[in-house]
Image (tube, rainbow over all chains, first blue to last red; front, side, top):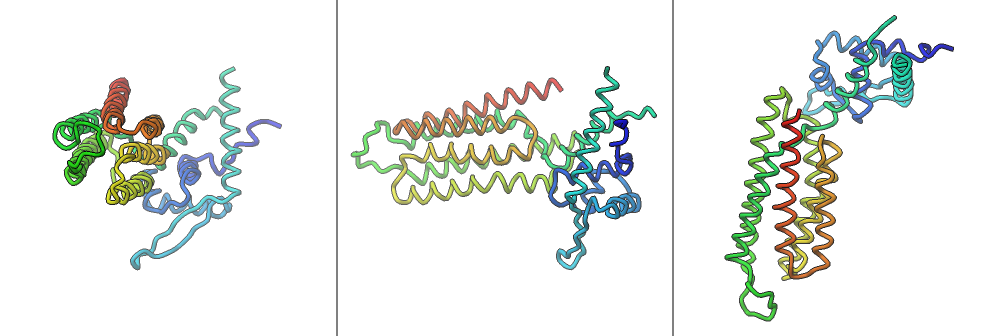
Length: 99
Length: 201
């Protein structure tokens, strides 16, 4: 088995990787904050969130703050585990390249 | 497929830090806070505190003046920290008031306000003896608690304050000296170390 097998295709994209990185160290993050941190457009961010949501790596929590909708994102157990696997795979590849 | 995985890793680290940790306070604000504390301590020593540690004397401790002195030191330090941090954030293109800052402040204030109220309650019952030790200990705990949300070595300043506070509690009567050491000297040392690190970057 090649170590490349552990590279998660879903994380092989800057924005999706970024969303997961942020959610790994924050309990909940809302759309606006993700947008600020990743410096992307609404549509772009929304489509990548959809992809992660579909894979059940993140869940969406909708609520209202002063009658304004506030959507928060949370990483699931599956998402966290997959992200860790992906990072380990990246580290292994880098180690191999160094040799 | 030769993708730059190094870049991926560094971007992950960067985002994790940016999203969960507030930018550090500047070293200069530490140095200035230390100086205010030294000046405040000197004023208290000269004007408000009894010269001899004789508890039988009738001269009452001018507790209101001491509290005012402490509040002024705190106010000057906080205003300085806010101004310098805003300046630094502006230079780095970072936002100052976001979820991370709010979490940082909340975690800093919980032990600090608890300690402050406790010390005031004790003071109103004429128990001043451990005030300096308690201030150092609770301030240290506040720093350690807040350090999870900031970059830098605030944690070690926190540990030092706690240790100093505990030693202070063991030596009644020397509160002012330990207080000056913790809030004055330690802040200045920490500030200089931070300042040198900032210059290097």
